[in-house]
Length: 78
Image 1 (tube, rainbow, N blue to C red):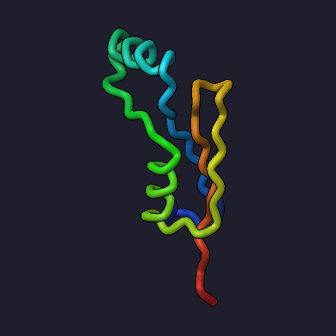
Image 2 (cartoon, rainbow, N blue to C red):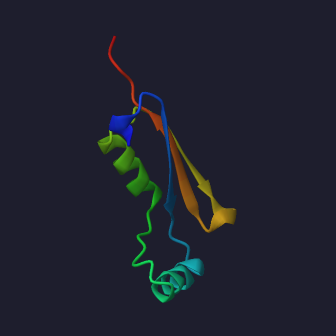
């Protein structure tokens, strides 16, 4: 996504949450959505760095099941 935009990238990553993680896995399996991958803040930061997002902020939203929202943009050399 970062390679396809000149603007901002906004991505949500499901985070680990002890009580909600097993329920979420079961729900995805029951409705046939496949497996779900959970991320730590370090995972999100690594992914952002590998994507070349220089200006970035990671926000954890606990009230939404421990989701990490990544907002970032690539810088270009002038």
